[in-house]
Structures are given as C-alpha cells and as structure tokens.
Image 1 (cartoon, rainbow, N blue to C red):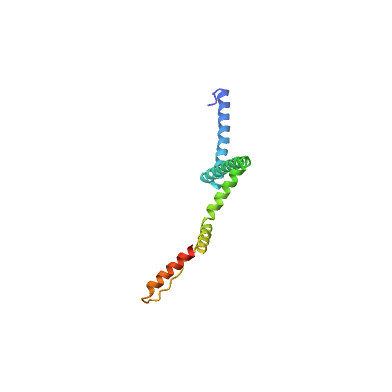
Image 2 (cartoon, one colour; image 1 turned 90 degrees about the vertical axis):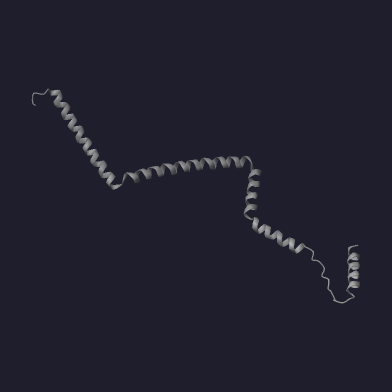
Length: 134
C-alpha cells in the first residue's frame, strides 16, 4: 500500500478527517435530541410560527377595523346599539309587558243580586254604561 500515489494518500487523509468531523456532529445531534425530542422541537417550532402568524393577522384585522370605524362612525353606533338591544332584549321585553299590564283598563265588575228583578237591573246597568260612554 505504500506504492499508492501521493494524491490518493492525501485524499484518504481528507476523507478520514471529514468522517471524523461528521461523526462528531452526529454525536452532538444525538445528544441534543436525547435532551429534547424531535416531536417537541417540531411542535414548539410550529406552535410559535402559528401563534406569530395569528398575532400578525389579528393586528392587521384590528387596524382595518379601526380604519373602517373612523370612516363610518354612524354605522358603528348603529351596530353597537343593535348589539346592546339584542343583549338586553329579555329585560326590555319584561319592562314592556309590565307597562302594558299596568296601562290596561280593567273591565267594570257587575254584581248579580240573583233575584228575578235582575232583568231590570241588567237594563239599568246597560243604560248606565251607555250613559258613561256618551
């Protein structure tokens, strides 16, 4: 083997040195993966990427909403009013029912004496009611 040309010997030495560097890198990678697994590395990387994209998108939407709100304050006021009415619909409807019940006119109560003369009383009552309406 000593009769190999000098070029081949140099190439073999370079190959062996590169192999030693590669082996060291592989050992460091294995040690690093032993500390934190591939799945956790990928999930943390993906999680941070997704959360940063969501944050960026939310900021863009917020800026657009601010711009639209400043351009159309009337529409914004109507929208907020509609939302408040929708959220407060049950108490508002209950209040309307209470007001309607208190404002309703009760019908006059007619007492029946239970006698035969009730026919005359009915006519008198009808005349009295007709007189009140006039």
